[in-house]
Length: 282
Image 1 (tube, rainbow, N blue to C red):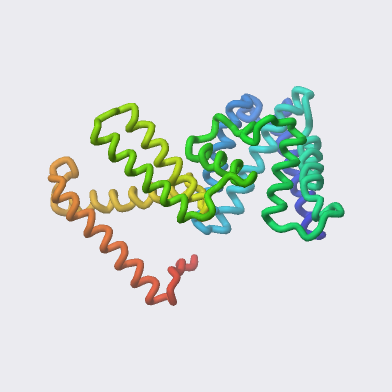
Image 2 (cartoon, helix red, strand yellow):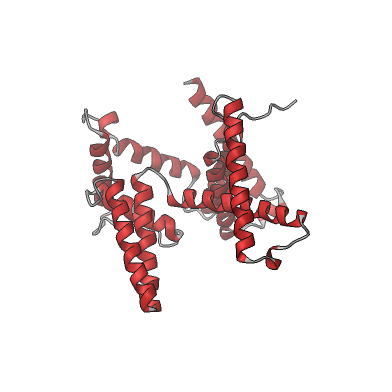
């Protein structure tokens, strides 16, 4: 309870700080912001929070979650200034929703499995929002990978899903075979469609394995970036640039970079009991 009391006190302070910044005599920069401005910052902070959490950096996660929360309060402030709703209304609404959608905790229903809880949650959403389709309400503005992931989640919550990741992977192989046929026929429109089907199928494999495709693809991109930068360094040692090299030479250097990275990781694990250790700040 002490933690909840402290959190409530600190949250109230944050609401008051934002109100002060936006008030006459407050911060000129904050007063000049629009809802769209803050929405852009909000999205940026969410991605930074995802990065910190995925990188397993608790201190960074704490800071970035605070930044996300600040942007939420800032956005709510615009609506309060327009007389539409307050931060208290936002909190009251989510509190009521969480209680109503957890009758197995706050009501009389007991002994529900995780699957039954999810099914009940989705059924309540359909009823509350008066949706005609279980796919209604998905954000059209979401990035394509995230949108595909949410489509799969929503359908799976109502029983439309692959039995396990292996079955979904077989579908990926099937789509790759279709893509290969399209490439050989040189039908551009069909190639584009098969590419989309292949990526969508891979998203389902990610979901069934418990991974968010946006996060794993971002991690893969970062890995490629690190290796490519190292490739550039190795070439510069020889007075060379990427554009000066043949594909065969670039491939040799690339494979050497990959090999060195793997060897370095194994040495770290060997010397530190299997897990890399961070250096302590002096």
